Amino acid sequence: MTKTAVIGAGAIGGYLAAMLADAGHEVTLCVRTPFEELTLEDEGSRRKVAAAIAADPDAIADASKPCDLVVVATKAQDTASARPWLEVLAGERTLVLMAQNGVDHAARIAEFGLAGTVVPSVVYVAAERVSPGAIVHHYSSRIIVPDDAAGRRVADLFAGSALSVERVPDFVTVAWRKLLSNVVANPVTALTLRRMDVFRDEAVQRLGIALLAEAVAAGRAAGAEFGEDELERTLKLYDGVNPESGSSMLYDRLAGRPLEHAYLTGAVVAAGRRHGVPTPLNAAILALLGAVDRTPIERP
Ligand SMILES: NC(=O)C1=CN([C@@H]2O[C@H](COP(=O)(O)OP(=O)(O)OC[C@H]3O[C@@H](n4cnc5c(N)ncnc54)[C@H](OP(=O)(O)O)[C@@H]3O)[C@@H](O)[C@H]2O)C=CC1
Ligand SMILES: CC(C)(CO)C(=O)C(=O)O
Image (cartoon, rainbow, N blue to C red; front, side):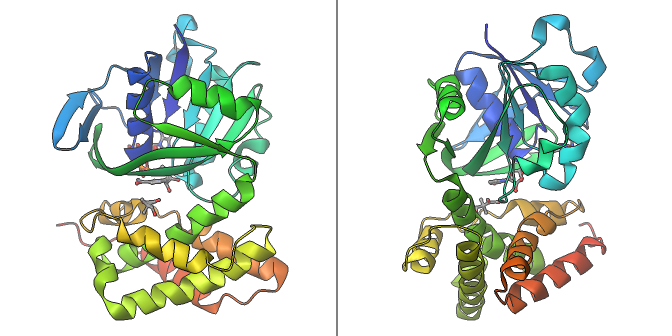
């Protein structure tokens, strides 16, 4: 049986673990906070996911390692803490799929010096962890990987599940394209403590467009091949979004967890600084997110 593991069984890790189990693979969930079982709610029905739960890298049975595929689905700021798991699970033939937002996926684990092949991915899955081990899938079931031998192996491993794995020659552009939605949806929902319905407000829409315009310019300077219609294309994405869904950053803020802003809005501001592209609005949003990150909200 193909051996797979998912480090970080939250919204995305839990969803991808379910897809790997559906594809017929052995799945080990590597968790920081243990829970009894993983369940996935999709279109109103909840089911249990067949996966072993492990809380200690040193206790992984020899029969479950090295893995064919290890998915890293922690928040970007927790990537360093995934290292002990990766050192135990990854061998020469292992694919390490980085299932995170942002644009510097491979760089985040480059210094680990792991055996195996790192595969960056762009995740188009909207999911929410409503309690430990309980995942709700809101909409979209798609990831994008580079069109190379490793990307093809990833696509093969998810075959037979509901997840579609798309392969593209220009990964830099698709990673920046996803970042465009994250530098609007994630900060605005997290700062306002509102779900996606917040974008029905015209003033919020105008703010979103202004944030996007800066991010498009910074992305282009960083090598993304954006067309003239990139901004409109991103706005169209919002038409298909469930107004009751939120963003990973909103869920973190509501739960009093650290925010991922440094890897999202921070990536735009850093690219702007590197390439001489002004990003004052994103810099302002970054400052606000930094401030709320250090200020826990009152839990209901
Ligand atoms: N949610 C969404 O709809 C989307 C999210 N993304 C991206 O996917 C990535 C994952 O986000 P998401 O699933 O929402 O995040 P969650 O917070 O729901 O899940 C992250 C999980 O990682 C666990 N974790 C952190 N450190 C470790 C560790 N060292 N070992 C084991 N587990 C660990 C956390 O454990 P604990 O339970 O202790 O907190 C948590 O369960 C992010 O980059 C996000 O931006 C991309 C597209 C959509
Ligand atoms: C908002 C969403 C689903 C897409 O923009 C996302 O990527 C996130 O929640 O981090």
